Length: 136
Image (cartoon, rainbow, N blue to C red):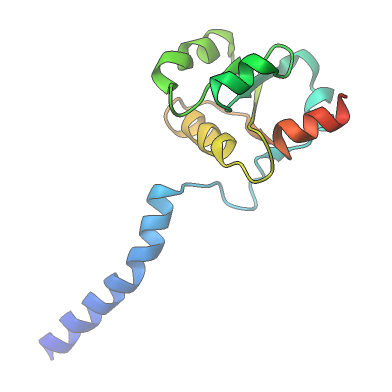
């Protein structure tokens, strides 16, 4: 009987490993906690928005949302102070990357929430491309 219980426990734990791995390596907010915001909604927040550009530095240097600060995974430690210097509890952080298919903004937003304990962190729906469409 004990062997059967051990085997069942082992099989159950083995079945849970993929879900656990996904939660650890790809942390995302639950779908009921929307972390996306449209360009028009973010612009309506006015000066209370801190724009964070998660694209590579070369892309940021070429063009970015006015007032945005760069912060990406590759140079996190070097760039983080620039974000924290401009952030305060009254500001909403909107992170963007190049497009809908870019996960860099999600990764940066999650790190800001989890590692830096920032609140009101959002991801720009459609990224830089959506900004360009609404601001030609």
